[in-house]
Amino acid sequence: MVEELGALGILPTDLTYRCAAGEGGEGGEARRVTALLVVVTDGAKWLYGRLARALPDAVWLLDAYHAFEYLGEYTATLYGKGTRATKEHYATLITTLTGQAPSNRRPRCHARSWRRKRPNKRRAVDYHQLIAAGFGIDTLIAYLEAYTVDAQHTGMHQAFVEKLRGLRARMDYLGAGARGMQIGSGAMESLHRTGSQLRLKLPGARWRPEVAQALLNLRCLGLAGRWAEFWSHDDLPRLLNTALGEHQPRVRRAA
Image 1 (cartoon, rainbow, N blue to C red):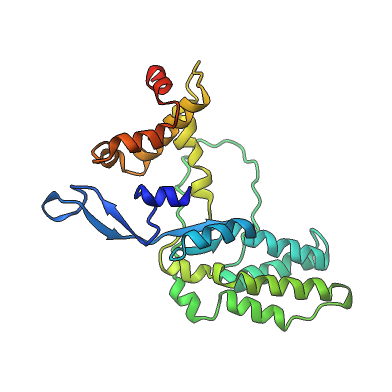
Image 2: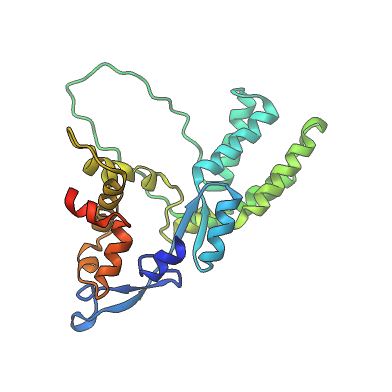
């Protein structure tokens, strides 16, 4: 699949992709532009192993949610789930890794008020300042290497530190933030609301699997801003066969 997307020019396997005519080229001509491909995955070794060979020039990041989950499981094993020592140690690890303390606020139910809610504005983070202050994955690994645990958890502790060493290159969240990258997959995981459900889950709608897949392919083209590029491509018949699949006649009738 990765090789196929690269051949179609959809996935910039060599960090460049073909920009359609009228999208920034001089005189309206098509050109090739440099792209930065960032892949955010979970901790599955087989997924990273397969895709890393196909995309050697990409930047790989471990989803921050999974990284925080690993740290939480580690501290819970040391001091027990939900204990004060676990919460304090977890906060120390998160702060060392990201330079920001985890939020301890819990959602509470409040009486409905007539006052208009203020917009939630996120505080800007100066990643360069945090890096200069010494936060980050290297500091976290050094902290855990010097951390003393009881004899019962020594093996688990050493295995966890070794795991972080293996994930070191994919857990440089401050460096990624300084380069404007996303460190989580929440934006992609929530894409189903606008990418598929908004188009397919219409009142009374029923879809064959091949028709639903074809609509989803075209919907993603529109969301990616490549709708005009797709329909003006010189090799449009081949692209249609790839996008709509082997059931193209049925798709045409259903559409």
